[in-house]
Image (cartoon, rainbow, N blue to C red; front, top):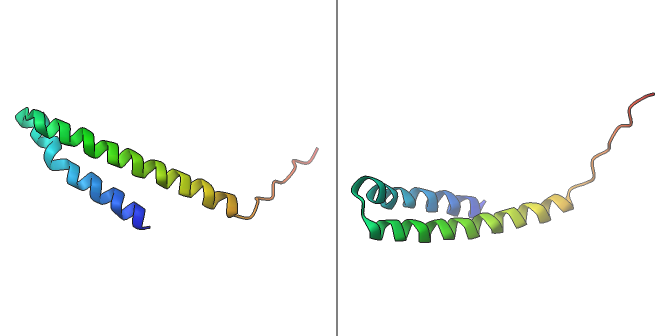
Length: 68
């Protein structure tokens, strides 16, 4: 859950620079947004890997065969 909170925090911190870039045409803010998005991407990838590992630890689902 810590990674999720960190992800939410990164997205919230992105808003100010995002607005500066698109509303005020501040080029430096655009560089910061791209850098922050790269951090978000890396964290999202780590979360995906955690989910995949955890999913493998779950008990297998029982699949019912259709009656013929």
